[in-house]
Image (cartoon, rainbow over all chains, first blue to last red; front, side, top):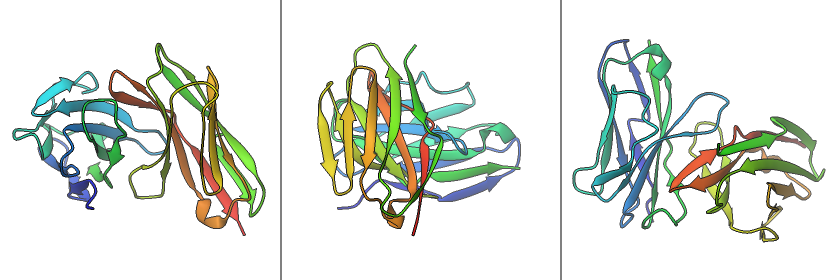
Length: 114
Length: 108
């Protein structure tokens, strides 16, 4: 079946601009996660949703970052006033239910802030 | 503090040369230790989950083991297609905490 999909695959923007990154989880998965991966590092947790609500947003670095999942399926990660330090690969993962199941990752969105 | 450390950072092997990757962890209340494979430009691909000391999982040339403080990913007679970055992670209150990964290169 279809895996986790993310769009766009690449995004280049200028410092100060607003960007939105989209994640389509595996059909039927109720939990959705966002991670950020810098070059040569492991992914770092940002936020996770159980259904429509954010169950844990402790990894969001500051208030420029925000994520939504209004219908409990697709999620959008929003970054305001982008900075060069935001450049990274943003990964989305989903799991069948709750937090006890395996997380399956999408291919990621590579964000470059010039 | 919950922490995961992987070693070595990079490993170069000749085809057929068996070796092991290490993942040391400190976490209050293990809820699963995960191994993923990541190819360049792609997302992590799930390999194994381990839950308790003494548990072992195998898949083709890979075997994962775990003790109370560390996990090992053993690679037997590797092939060039095993070249990738291998990530270890522990689950803490739902989220995964990753190590920095081991970049494995297998030369023919």
